[in-house]
Amino acid sequence: MSERNSAMDRRRAHEFDAFVAGAAGRLLHAATLLTAEPATANPQAQRLLTAALARTYADWDRLRGEDPYNLTRQELAVRFARSAWRHHRVFAHSTWRHQRVRGGVLDRLSPQERLVLVLRLHEGVAEEQTAAIIGLPADRVRAICNRAVATMRSAPRPRRRAVLRAAS
Image 1 (tube, rainbow, N blue to C red):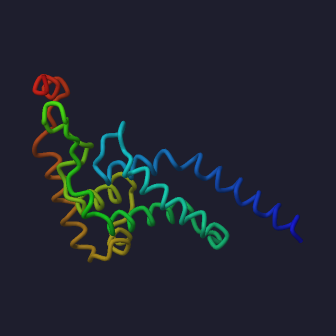
Image 2 (cartoon, helix red, strand yellow):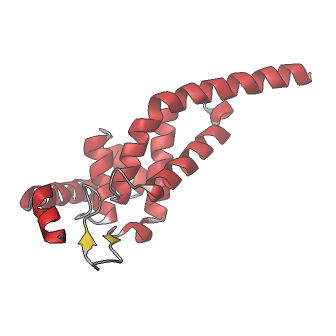
């Protein structure tokens, strides 16, 4: 009996490893966008993804035909929404010059706007599904998405050279 359980555990671990190898990069990118951290320094996004993957691994045997990517993405979104107050604005501060350095690509958006924008545009989740995941009406999700897109289009991010000149 223990050999059978051990073989099942190995199969489960192998299947999960294959899933993570294929999906972790995209999920980490989504988590990084959510937390508004720079792609090169994203410890909050890594913690968020690790927790979501741990939950997926715990539920692996109960998936029964469900898409593990969708389950992990939903868990990532729910965990982010629960902890969004920690991710309002992410800025690194230079202790040396006391200057603000920009965070990630979506750092100008509120956590709710980032969540809706990432689910709708980056992940391609339908409006109704996004609304169900975050517990808002679909028309509210549409309004938040429109506002987030308008914000991102309104004022372009400063070019890297301008940021570097300002820092020196």
